[in-house]
Image 1: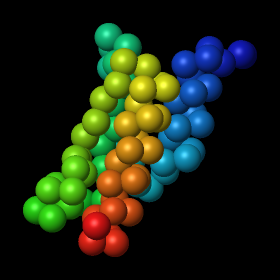
Image 2: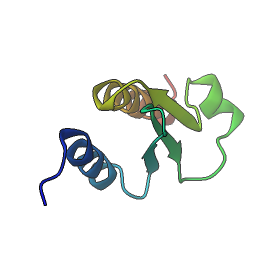
Image 3: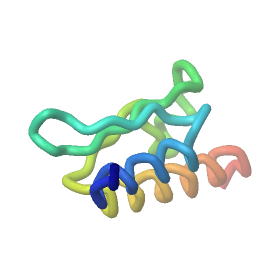
Image 4: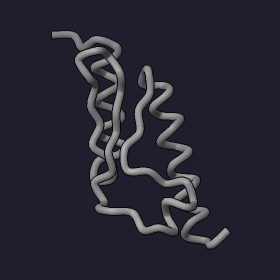
Amino acid sequence: MRLSAEDAAWGRMRDRYAGAWSIWRSDRGRWYATRRTGALSRAEMDAGLVMTVFGDDADELTAILAEQERFAVQALSGS
């Protein structure tokens, strides 16, 4: 059975972010990701990190997750 493009994108994202984010699609087609790492500190939230993000499609969610990775690096470096 051949996977749809969305199913293939979902599988790639789940593999890439395994352990860090739980990724799913809503019944209305919106893409979500929730951190698996536990609660964020006030400093992490002040740096722009959030627990759950969403996008209209896989590309938008991927961009948001990349931004969250950049924010995490900045929070760890103190800048």
